[in-house]
Length: 265
Ligand SMILES: Nc1ncnc2c1ncn2[C@@H]1O[C@H](COP(=O)(O)OP(=O)(O)O)[C@@H](O)[C@H]1O
Ligand SMILES: [Mg+2]
Image (cartoon, rainbow, N blue to C red; front, top):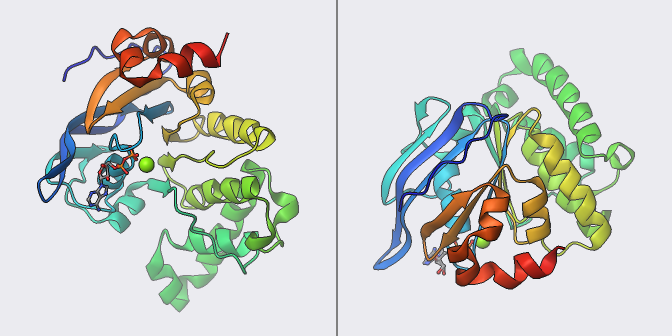
């Protein structure tokens, strides 16, 4: 389904490009040929009703699951058949709907493990260990500041509030020092105060990263996205600037009407 590409004067070059991505589970078509182009240093949101295929698309882009068809280019490389850990090394990091924290470990240790995940061989090679430790200490300090959690560095992750845990999950992804960060519903289950903090955090990330965001809170999507891709039944229904998507008749008809027009003045 071809949709006109929006022109974004501030956007960088295309960092991630997927063409005709398909995913079948037996006869069920979860993705029926998805095209998406994500420009560097933007927030690119993927929205759509439950079951539209958003999380499946993330699995395809990050390599958690294999595609049934199509092609994925990242940072100039064809990553379509590469396993997830190779894509992590290329600069993809993800924070998924399922919580992946070590609850008994302090925040700092969670981030250390995530930072070391970038180069697993370093953890096994005693000769390079000091370098690894040094760089991971720097990374941890900068991530703690980035997600605003310096004062919780020694707090076990299990003692954090829900909102703080979700911010730490973003921090875990950042600790891999990624080019692109994939966030799957980072605000799910959050209260209003935490929502605002997460919104500002995500918005701040695009200075140094490219953000691909699945988000159901329309007010956040409309406020912080450079580009919005709308999915429905495993396909792209529309793509454009937030304002265009808000006014897109097909999108309104499909499911958004009330949420967009009713949600904001
Ligand atoms: N492992 C699987 N086996 C079979 N069907 C799946 C599997 N994973 C997801 N699906 C189906 O694919 C569709 C898209 O799911 P998903 O990508 O999770 O949607 P979204 O994230 O947009 O809510 C849904 O109908 C879901 O039931
Ligand atoms: Mg999902």
